[in-house]
Image (cartoon, rainbow, N blue to C red):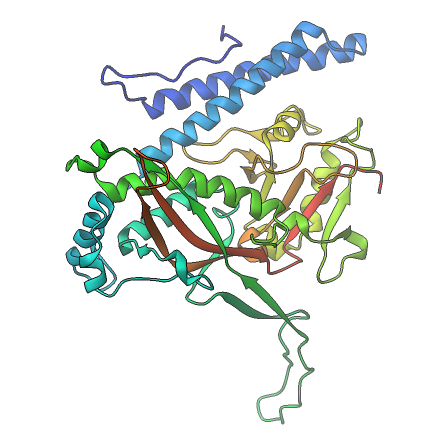
Length: 417
């Protein structure tokens, strides 16, 4: 009998967690969850209410599943992390830049960097200064953000060298027509174009190091900087890509106007209402999820994902279809995503909790619906003065984002209409 409390991931003698054993433990927990939830549902059918002890047991196992899934994702990410690459785009090792940058980070001596003319003044604020990190370090930061930032991992990502990306979009699709092989080509209808603008905003992190760390020649400072800033960048990005207002940050997809799917128009995100204020319907709750899936056109559904936070996921995890099968299914292998009704589920803590007129569930093809814009270049400014005896490294990158196809993302609204 599986214990309903969370079990720790298996650990080897060397202190490293083993991914396959941890995944087996996760699957055992899910089986225990199904048994406990089936008992809860049976109590409801018999007595019209669930036993308090059983309900508490289901909730505890559900929370344990969330924690184990998060631990699995972390372990899979650590295993998948490549060593910092040595190859640049030109195919040879840029040792000169790397050595000059390392000298600057360790001692503050920027003469070699200045000699290479790599000084990069910040956009619109030249007094900030800073030096571009080596290209392989920038690439590594981008890879880790793609793995850590939920929306970035499923959205389109475009790199630009300017401050703003301007993208024309054909609202009514391309202008086309049918003709015979030898007949004249009549003029097609003029396409309606909308210009979407995605300005990049500054995102920063400020890791601190001791003098002894910087003096230790064994420490890979490129790896250290990447590891220190990844979590800070991912957390800030995650919040902005969901709820950002577009002021000094990317605009999140939940910041756009929403309308009922029957009244959808370009510039708005369509939603399906549950019909109940702040909750799913008590009868056949899975029907509104099906309606949300089919509110999305077939061309978008092929690459669609669910997006919700862990509280909403915990509630939906208890639902079954008409045949008694659970709608939520665990990942097929470690490092993969859980599935809901056959579509991957992305957990984003920045999504709102279930409440009246909130939209805690999103469904869509985010690779076509949401665009992340990265301005090339990650800068580091060494500051040995502000927090003595520690040395601060003011690390910045410029990021933008917003909806690029308003028909590719649908929302589930917990409201009457």
